[in-house]
Structure formats: structure tokens, C-alpha cells
Image 1: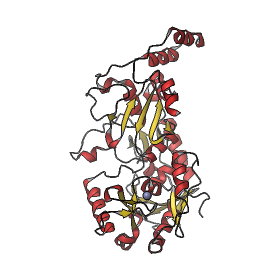
Image 2: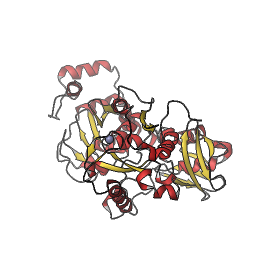
Image 3: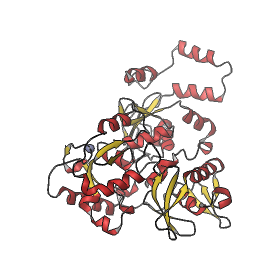
Image 4: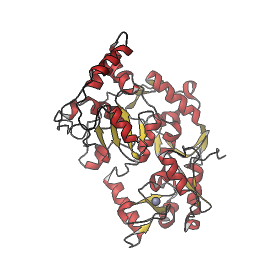
Length: 418
Ligand SMILES: [Zn+2]
């Protein structure tokens, strides 16, 4: 049914050469007494057809959608294969252009995050696709006003902070800060002075992000963004295209024009965009070192088996479909815990379980799988979560304290954990 509506709105399948019929053209004229620039562009946009073979960098729907989602064309000078043909992007993502929309393929978690950020909608028949309408407000705005004035960071603050749990953050003055857990309405932050962590209102981070969004920069001083301004600055520094400017007071500045291409490493996989709070860390094989560690951890957990059950859904998979995940994030684990490999880590399948657990949509409580209430039951993620709920997790006792940590600090619990 979705496909039908797509075909209808898409102006005919596969032709890619939709020319408005006289009736359509007349209809368009009638609806706009005074066709302004927006309307004119919108019309051009609908009537535009781009011949296959055009360099990808000149196929504007391709370029605009990639820009909006922060993705890069692998070969901008290569020939575009045409409408409804797949173009591969970095990070194992891909995109194809239909006459009036684009479908971007990525991990379900990233697709969900994009939808949440208002960048498109999850295709109801397949949660690995984000559908971006080419005449959507976002693109229209960009076409009319230019990318300069497009909103900067449309990011869910809770999600961003959850992604940073355990990550070593550095304040502007160079002090280490670390988020121990996200427990709305606060986050628990460890510093030199309070290694056990102390609460910081999430609202402080949200307010600073709002200022950065509207002003393009934010002063990192308590007067402006609360008494934990140093920590808030350390978080904002994580956002892409930001830099620190000045010293009294220092400011975080959003600067999309800074040169990011200065030192592209040779290792292909490290050309993936650095995991940003936008994307979660689903594209985890970022460095060769991490890949090696993943392989080592996985073989430890497999213990010679050539297939094993996913610790969460229980389905049996060969190793390449299982990801060795830390139940308690490695960055948050003590040295002893980190060495407790068979219990602090588990094999979770890449068909959703790993990502759902990592992103806090599911957790394990007293040996049973629990799902967050913060997801629409009818959405693709919601259906997946509901299907897993209540499963008994074998062997959970040995990992109980790690599961508890995850439940307390990462899980999107329905009520605040105090
Ligand atoms: Zn699974």
C-alpha cells in the first residue's frame, strides 16, 4: 500500500521523466495566484528530471539529502546511475532518488534518530529506510534560504547524552569529565573532584544547545548556562563542526566551514564520519584497533563455537551476525569488571538486539527482558521491542550487576530512576 502511494506521488514508476500534464500545470497555476520564488522552485523541483550519467555532485536531490543527513558521497565525480538506482554512501549506507522523494538506507537506529530529528520518515514497510520528501519543508527551506540558515543541531538531548555515557570528555580547560548515567531529569557526571559522580540537570545542557542553535555560539560561563558550565562545554565540543573560540570567556562556536578534510587517514574504515551524538555509535568499526578488539572479544565469547545464540532474542546465528557487546560499557567498567569478559560482555545479534540494547530501548531486569515505554507500539522499533519483551534471559545471574548498571544508566525507563 505504501508502494502504491509512492508510485502515485512519484509521478510514474521508473520513468524518471515526469512531465506535468496540461491539467497538472493548470492546477498548479490555479493554486498560486502569485507564484513566488518558493512556488516557482517547487514547480521546477517537480518537473526537473536529471539524466543518468550526470556527475553525482551535480544531482541536487542527492547532494541536498546527503547534506541534510550529514552523509558524504563516496565518489562525487562518478556518474549518477539514474532514478531508483542505488548509490552507495559511506558507512554502508545507500540512497536512491525517486522523482519526488529519496530513500536512504541505514541502520534502523539511525533511521529512527533521523526521523526523530524531523529529517524524514521511516518507511512503514522497512525500518532500514528513511524517506525524505524532496519537496519537504527542510529541502524547500534549504533551496530558498540556502543551507546557511538551516537549523543547526536538531538533536534529542537525552539521546545525545546517552550516547556519551562512559566516554572521556574534556572540558575547555582540559579536565576529564565522564557521564556515568542518564537518569532524567539529571545526568550523573564524574570529575576529578567527584569520581563517584554528581548530578547535573539535563535542562542545563538543553539550554546551552538551544543557545548554540539559535545564536551559532554559546559562552561557556555559569551565568549563561548554569554552574556546571565546564561540563556542558565538554559535551557541546562533541558536536560536529564546533570549535572553541576565545578564553575570557571561552565560547563554543558552530562553524560548518572549518576544514575537516585536512588529514584523511588511509585506513578505509576510518573515513567513516566520526561517531557523533547524532548517529549513535552504530558504525562502530571506526578504527582498526577497535575491530581487532571486537574480533578478540567475540572469539572469547564464542569459545570455539561456529554459531551461538543471541543473548537477547535467543536466535542462533553464525559469528558474523553476532556482535560482542559490553553489557556495562567498557568505558564505565572498572579494570576488574573489564577483565570479567564472559560476564560483562555478551553476544547480541545485529538484527536489532545489539542496537536496541545499546541505545537503551531494551534492558534486562531480574532475568527478564524489559522494553521502554518511550516508543510508539506501532512503529517498527516499537513492534520489535514488544516482541522481545518478557523473554527470559538464560544465564543472567552471572551478569546481573552489569545488567543492573545498564538498566539504571542506559535504559529509557518509563519513570525516572532516582
Ligand atoms: Zn537477537
